[in-house]
Structure formats: structure tokens, C-alpha cells
Length: 501
Image 1 (cartoon, rainbow, N blue to C red):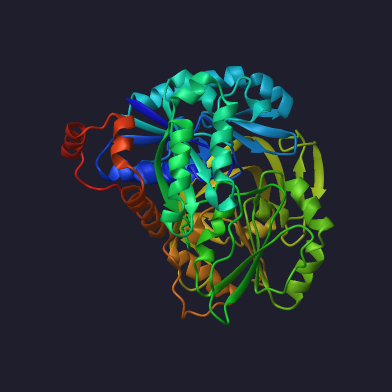
Image 2 (spheres, rainbow, N blue to C red; image 1 turned 90 degrees about the horizontal axis):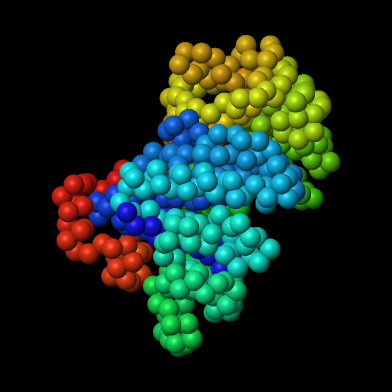
């Protein structure tokens, strides 16, 4: 077993993309490979095959390997509930809520879960591509670190450092990071990957030569800026895609604790949809469809919606015939009230809902985490879909007597009596083109546009990344780091001839 860790000079340096690219490149050669992220802080998560949850970026990397996501791949997941507190998920299961200082003290214990998960994963796969978090040079977080060099030292693995040249100052990023880590950590940092380069590579070569001479490290390669790359983001809300004139106008409020906004990535690619994310203090534009996303703190985000004028905007939108669709936390918000008597998502209490649907929601312990499949029952057709549920709340009320879908024959979600409002607990419905088309047709889009098969799109993007590894990185250097000589790869190819799907 060999582990290689990809760390970054900053958050959003491109670690997730580089790990996904390496995983796909190795898997296409038949190498038994799995992703690993010791600690992640994210509100975008995915249900695992063992009934837990991990960060969505790690689930994407599992897909790159041709694997179902497993809780061992991301043993510590922090889901922020406030500026100073988060829900702590250990090996897929809720451990509890902690403020930042308490968690900082708890990290030494969390490290046990990290190493247990890494050993379990290493027993099943020959190569582990691990991903760091943030930067290894964050001085205030280095004590008891489990996310970057703390793990690399414990696992005794090599490290590649990724820097984002598009932001500027990449040489200072790389050299400065090396200066701020320990001697043993510098020794295990074997080289660099420069990410998001635009322009003529010849103009960069003098800088690369200087970097090698200055640090005595290898530049493993330079990856280009990828225009049009739409793939599951870690946390940042993606920008809108390109739509055609006359497109359906769709808006999404960017809630302070917005979760699983990847639900809407397929709409960014749809030529018939003009998708806009509306941040704090931005004017709320006219739209055909308002999408209310998931939330890690439903009551808190309900209060934020009120402070931003969304209830009034939604009522006006409905008076003019607009449509509203809520998913998970957004669905809960549309009821009469949301109660959290045990303070599972923050302070205990009850918050008035948007009163769009005749139902109430109560937060209960024991998070629902499951993959689901079903059929939409919005119109004449009954397109099938798959997705997942991930929530604490239980909703009840007459609104649920008019379901939006069925799951294994059981009613799910709600449709208002005037057919202007729908809601569901299921994430991922837009990933399937038939289901996406049915919902967009309900919202007013014509049938001249074909929805994107987002599952196929993910695989295409992963193959695009793997192709770049072949074209732009020193693959012989990578094989050396991973202990993959020619004979080793031939044996792997005999064992697994086909590319992952």
C-alpha cells in the first residue's frame, strides 16, 4: 500500500481537482486506488454505501476511482452551524456539536478515527490519494493537526504541494509554505503542482527553473486553467452557466448555511435555464422559478430570509404566477413552523415558517441518511429518479396528502393545491434528465431543450482531468512516488482491464 497526499498553499488551490484527476488516471490503468480526506469542513455531503455521510468532493473522487463512497474515505467531517461551532461527523455518524475551541482540544482523539479509517482503507486498496485541507502552514492550527502534515507524518507518506497561479504570487505561496513547516515536513514534500495556468508555458519556465534551484524540489507539472469545468464544488457556490435567449429564469438564495447546493449544478449546464444565485443584500430579481436550497441550520436561515426580504418577494412572485420549489431544508421552511426543542441545529425553539404549505416540521435526533429511488407525479408522465435523503427533521400536515413523488410506492414531498409550490426531502433529482425536464416543464420551460445527464457529465469531466495528468504532469515521477513500476502496472491491468464507470 502506498499513500500520496496532495496539499495546497491555500484553500481552493485545486487540491480536490488534482486528487480527482490522479484517482481517475490511476483507475483507468487498472490500479486499485481510493481517495482519502482525513478532515473536511463542508456543508455539501453525500450518503455512503455503509449508511454514513462524507464530503461531496470525496464522493466525487470515489466516483473517479469507480467506487461507491464509503465513510472511511472521509473520517472527520465538520458541518458548520455557526461562525464558531459545527456538527462533528466521525466515520459517517454524528458525534455531536462542538464550538471551535472544544474541537481544537478534541482533535487528538479525532486523530484515532482518522488513522483507523486510513488503515481500514489501506487494507482494501493498493494506492491511497489523500487530500489535505486549507494550508499546512496555518500556524494557529498546526498543534494537533490531523488535516495536513499531522496526518502525513503519522502515515509517513509523501506530499505534493499545489499552488494556484491564477490568484498571483504562486512562487511566494510555494516557497513561503516550505519555510513555515518543519524540517521533516519539508523532507516529505517531494514536489509541486502549479494549477490554473493561462498563457504561454515558455514564459513560466524561468520561474520554474528558479523554483527547482531554490527548493531542490521537483515541479511535477503545470495544469492549465480549465474553462467550462463544471464539477461538484467543495463549498463555493458555482457561477451560472451559459443560457440561450428566452431561457427560464431561476433564482436561488445563498443562505448563510446553504447545504448541498450541488443539487443545482445540472441547471448551470442547461441551455434553457438562466440560473442565478442571489447573495446577501443583493436585489431579488424577477424570476419564473425560485429554488429554496438545503440548510444546515434551517431556523437560522429562515430568519436570514426574512431579514433579506425574501418572504415578501416570494409572495409577490406567486401572485404573478411564479413557481417555488424547496429541497430538504428549503422544503421545511415552506411550512407553518419549524421547531427544534432539543437544539439539534443551534438554540432550542420554534421559528415561524414561510407559510406556503400547510405542514409543520420538528427536528428529531437520529439523522435520516439513505439513497432513494422513486417516480415524480407532477404531470402526465412519471419519470423515475434516484437521489438521497439527509436530514433531521420530520414534517407532518395536510400538505403531504398531495405528494410530489413516490418512493417505493410511498408518498413523498408535497404539491400545493394551486400547483405553484412543490417540495421534497430528496437531493439529486436534477441529476436525471427526465426528472429535471419534468420539473422544468412544470415551472414553465418548453420542451425544445434537452436536460443534461449530469451523471454522464461527471464522468466526462473526470476523464478530461485524467487526460490532463497524461498531458501536463510528469507521470514517471508520479509512478516513482507511488511505487508503480511497469511490471506493477502490467499486473494491475491483468486484474482490471476495463476503465471505471
